[in-house]
Image (cartoon, rainbow, N blue to C red):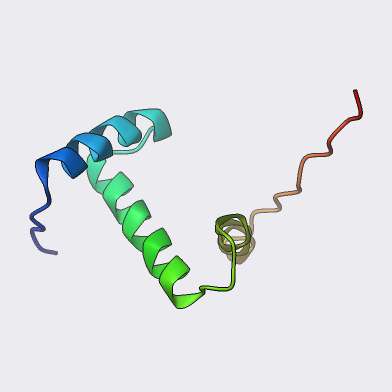
Length: 70
């Protein structure tokens, strides 16, 4: 555990995003760090593919939504 110094504007964005995501500011920062690391280490995967893979590895059965023709 350590202290990370970040720019005030980024901290403000973390605070705002954490409210939308129902996470603490620290949890939001951890999420962004983890996703960023996964994106950098898996550059051929899309964000959606990375999230789907992480959900599957956690045992979540997330099925894509069917798009209805209007």
